[in-house]
Length: 302
Image 1: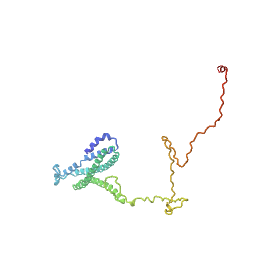
Image 2: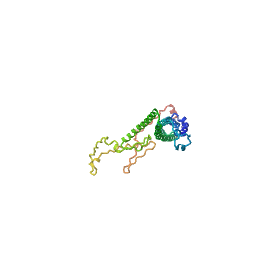
Image 3: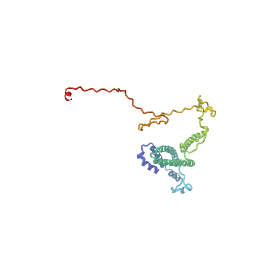
Image 4: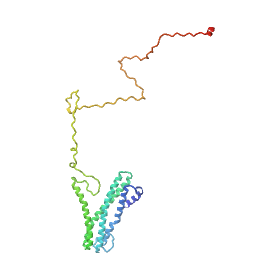
């Protein structure tokens, strides 16, 4: 309880708005109510009303009773134990719900250490609540038997007996559906614990649905043979299936960065003469030079 309080006050400001923190609040509230019931103190009061001397340890209760308590006091203690049993049953259900919420939050791995601590705390508190419920369920019939021996009033007797019968019927109704579901299945479950965990069930192979009947039979494959080549006698007829090879893609051109390579010619071919430029047809006649026409100045100077 003190560890839960410390974890609660340390992470309340940081995780107060988270979804898994609601489970922490619920576990803290129910754990505080169980702690306030003070079951050991209630049992000490029950043992002390049969003795005149005050309680000084367990040795004082080992002797004979020295006092007959009033039936009303025992009836109040019985009602208190019945209420505690109802609280413990609801607490176990809340602890299991919180355990599942913490396991889902653990997969996030954001606050893995915190969720591991919370899982361990809620597991321990659930185990303690189950132990307390078994203890109160065991001692309640014995206290009721002592209550009957004291010859209480009929009204008080009927009130206590009705509450006990109601609790017994509710526990039987909750156990019978569980047994009916377990017997209806062909194999028994692997784990029969009362812990509400998804552990799965072992299913026999005979109970599995047949998947082969639902599948439609595939049509037979008709073999196609090549008419040009006769089938070889070694292979059966069903294996003579025409196979086509996929066309290979055209070769990619070389990258532009590389220089073009000269083609490789075989040695047998004759060497071709190099290509020359075709001469342009021109006239072979020489043009006569025109003589300059002499003027008077040329005649003077020759």
